[in-house]
Image (cartoon, rainbow, N blue to C red; front, side, top):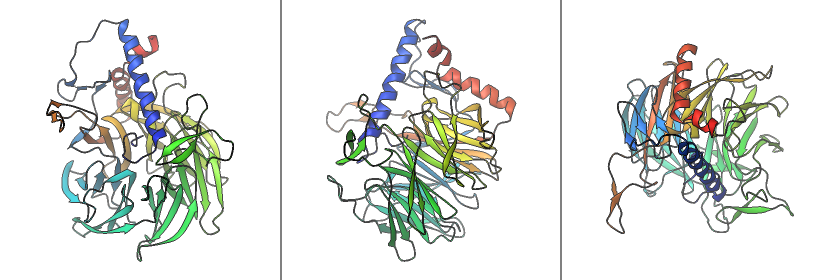
Length: 453
């Protein structure tokens, strides 16, 4: 759920993260009251070990690429696997060499929008690898050119139609998808609750579809577009509603006052007909199985995944991404990707600081959690590198190295806007290695103490 502090975003998303954050601290306090106090200081505590201010520890697997000043919210791997693009809370696109584990380029966003930045998500290569498209929170799509030698340069911007929300004119684009020929770009218009289709050769909008509240991600399968909606279906007269950002509304629970459903809109692109599938809370990233048979939706506030059969467009399985639905500590699954053979599904469990490894078997309804891989602080994007058999993971948070000066008081210190993310490059472990990595994850967030509490 990488969207929790994105400017101009949806307020209900902020509420979900705040609640989970507070609960995690309270659980930690409750358990620690019955244990000997831990006087270990927050910060780096040895080689490849960091103590967090939320009663957790990081011991990430694989290679870690530090990204000072950046909160990486999206990843995209080039079709040939040479380039890994990442972007977040800065006005630039970073290009990483996944083979070397180094940053190859810093590419500034094109003028005149020098203060633009990646939205909640939305970063994709064209099918031929010659372009990169980035959702700019200020209402446009930033386009980058990729030369044959892999050099990336800013090209141009595609201005989106205005959202004309009650308190904001510009659109907030989110997830992106491209047609197989690379000509049509599908854009989740998060603020206006629409899916836009853009001809990237003419930079014109060719189709507009209404979807649910706050669309987040989109995937294309057999002439259909699947769109995840953070806030579920649009409110109807008589529904209890709350603010969803810039004056828009979302259906809410009468007690908790947060969005009470998530959904996936299924659009027949040719006819324009739409079907809405109810999933669970805070439906976020989508992934398509390699054979195109299934679309999987990560339900970040329900700790599970909804598996949709693309033949019937019905949910055929719900998969938990934590060991037991009864576990007190949440997982916040918010991003996912498949192995090339479709037998493994990898899920970014944000609050566990881990990647869940799942056996994917929806046909027999026997999908299951195999184990967990420790990564950085709150993983929020993931992709699979086939050639190197590594997981590329964007970790949204991290501890800054040096304090920051407050512009108002002049004091030195740290705050939540002191970004320092990272990218983890993790070899896919065998079953024996996965067992020990899983134990490390449980130790890192004190699973035993939480269970006793």
